[in-house]
Amino acid sequence: MTVLRHVIESISPASGAHAEGARQNVAAAEAPLLTRLAGILGGAQHTARPRAARRTIVVCAGDHGTGDPGIALGASHPTVVAAHAIADGTAALAHIARSSQAPILIVDAGARESAAMPSSAIQLGRGPTHDLLAGPAMTVVDAALGLEAGIALAVSLADHGLDLLAIGALGVGAEVSSAALLGAALGAPPTGLGDAGAEAAGAHGAELAGSGAIEQLASLGGSETAVLAGLVLGAASMNIPTVLDGYATGAAALVAAAFAPAIRGYLIAAHVGAFTQPRILAHLGLQPIFEVGLGHGEGTGAAMVLPLVDQVAALVARG
Image 1 (tube, rainbow, N blue to C red):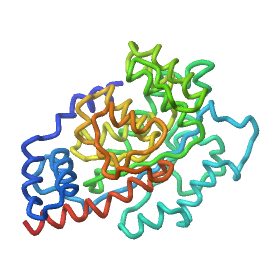
Image 2 (cartoon, one colour):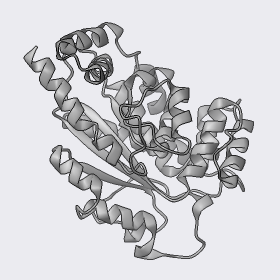
Image 3 (cartoon, helix red, strand yellow):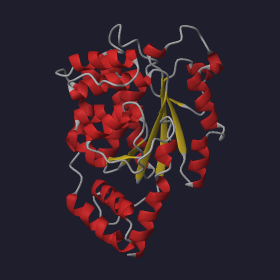
């Protein structure tokens, strides 16, 4: 946990002065959305002239015990199918990433059918989690190792140059875990989700509201939640903003914020999302760039923010 503590202590609040300077540098365009985005980027990067050229999209896969089908699906598993579509370039995310000149990194943090995942996927996790409604989703050791793997990935990406990170997630059962982590963050069960299992998980999460962040992650999160939370924390410690996609990435942001509240200033919400995501964003105090739900959180929505970031950088460069 020494690495985690060091990273948390390295995260300073986003710079309000630089955020205002970035907003002023694009104000002449009279584009409120770009002005708001410039402020987030400038504050997170601690510069009035935010950069955008070096970016990476990380898609983290992890299956949850609550969604385990009970039989081996091999290459037909939904997580595997989605990962291969991204890897072979047929997924919507791949098309958007190409047009935005953003490389995609697929991380296998705990896919149920790991052997069938694309050969290009990086193995970082400790395997799929257990059913959080029947017991802890994973051990504290697994949760800590997942966090440290995400931090190590952030450092590795930054070593090659990184201005901006966009994240997505794949995995069965992530919606139930997101409800549980939201319940823990709120200290009350989220209702009106339209899913009995998720609402039961939310109530269970609310019971753990007084426990520490690592205990909540281990009890309620997924293997991909741990890696993504570490990735967000590591990026923020190096003044790199992260674009969130759907509720699985939102759940990781909740975990990261429980460790280091200052990371809120390093987060960009791509879209309002679905299921638990609107309430996650409200709790984190994030206003989405797009006021609609886009995709299922595999990274497509986050990638759609990249052209806007390019416009901000171009305006700043001309200013």
